[in-house]
Length: 284
Image (tube, rainbow, N blue to C red; front, side, top):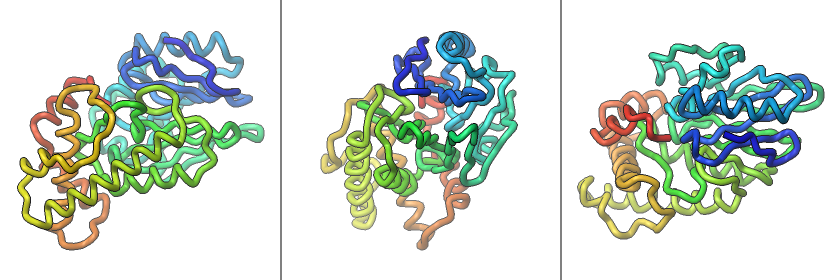
């Protein structure tokens, strides 16, 4: 693992060796790491590389969400303050390393004129957060962006409406560099591609449900737009299945639902593929 400098004070490894990407922001007094990869070995490797390039000690670890490929390297940062959104512990109840700092909506880390903004977004998962470093116009998107590959939307708390909303929020922000949860460094052009796919897919899925099309037929519908290739067979079908179930559940409820209520209901609808995939650790 290599801590490559991508902007002044900003580092990342997007090689894929750690399954999920990992990044860091060097502030004057301390360094903040974003996500911890799939294992202690890869996390230690990244930290060693990072500390050889920075002067400020590593003091904080932000976890963008609870998936294994972003949190299993936590032991490499056991001397750091772990920061997560509040829903994190509801989703990862067996976590050995509990966060020291949690936040409901947002949190700002301030240090000698610099600020690191951490925002709870939801979408990919109920606890998904992004990190924004405004002084360098850099966004750490977590798995709200999978650059140049089809994304994972098989989580039991997947919410396409919230995901679309946060993508649109990104377009209003001063962002020049995006460190995605997976894939290479990218820009707002990637966000635009996501928005187009999400809006088109949501619109068509609602139409199919309204006309009484069954789940299996809807998932196989050829009208959904093309997107990037799958990084693993079945990822696209899994995403469309979750999309269908999300809007089907909304229709049953007959009214806009609160995120907490909906996330509780959708827990019972995760398919076998999703459960096996989450258990394997090889997901996002």
